[in-house]
Length: 93
Image (cartoon, rainbow, N blue to C red; front, side):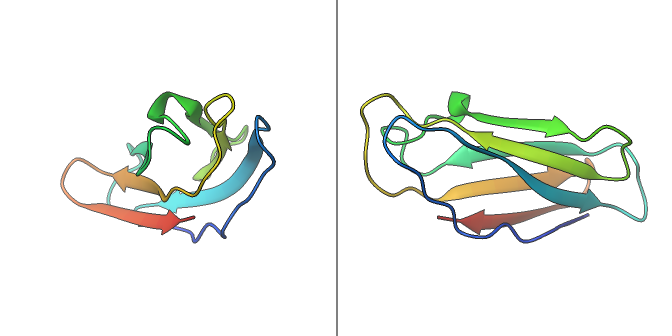
């Protein structure tokens, strides 16, 4: 599978970011699992990362990032796509 690049993001305290558009694709499988994780749960918890399909499909997805209340700092966000056999990811701050 492949996943498009997601540029670095920033926001003010207590302000969500997104939806951020990105694309996933796989020439072998249309059944893809997409997930996201944060390297610093005190800034952005994994529960604050929401991946949603874009209406119309074609591999389009969005990511909305909601930081932990009253938190500030930097974290790396990794977005992964898997077809059950292989995986790819993009990481951004």
